[in-house]
Image 1 (tube, helix red, strand yellow):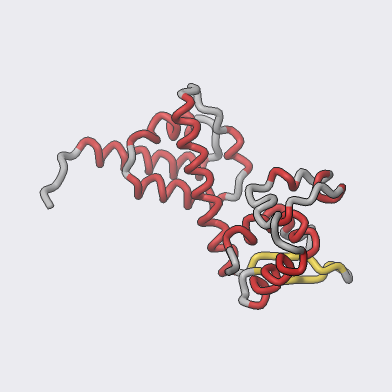
Image 2: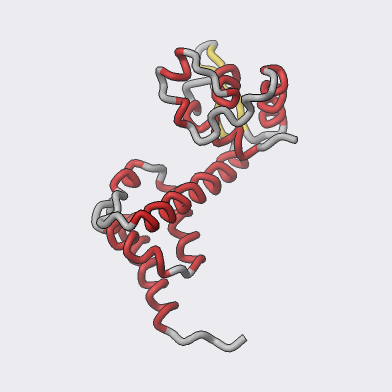
Amino acid sequence: MVDIRAILRAADGLIGVGGRALLAKILRGSRSKDVLSRGLEHNPAYGIYQDLPEQEVMGRIDWTILHGYLHIFYDCRLPLLEYSPAGWKIECETYADEIIEGFDTLLVSAQHPYPVSFLKDMNREVIMLALEKIQASADRKYLPLLEDWGRVDHKKVVQKISAVLRCLADRTASPAQPS
């Protein structure tokens, strides 16, 4: 079985700069110079297929390409990977979930103010999806973190954060509706 999410997550650091062989090294947990020099050992999917032979990992990568989750494009004659629209949709969802899991860890640490400035440089589509997921959760635990985040991000993200804060506050202020 091909774990599409793991392969797409491993590909994140390679999009536009690496190909299938480097993706296979990440998935197998290689300590090669080209992996370590790019910091790819920090990828969340690093080593997920460490127990599989290289040919099996390459087969899984090829499956994701053949089924339209990743594409190969050429820069001069160098084959590089890029997400297809379907692949990007899955990766965006996965990445947004990781952000929320990271928030849950931050909230448990009770570190205040929350160190969220790193979010300023993240993909805007992923950030907006994470905020939509927080809003849909209706979980008040995110309020202090969102307040801290709203102090450090760019205007459009701050506007979305404000909307989510209002929504969460409105949901908690109104009495529960009978089922």
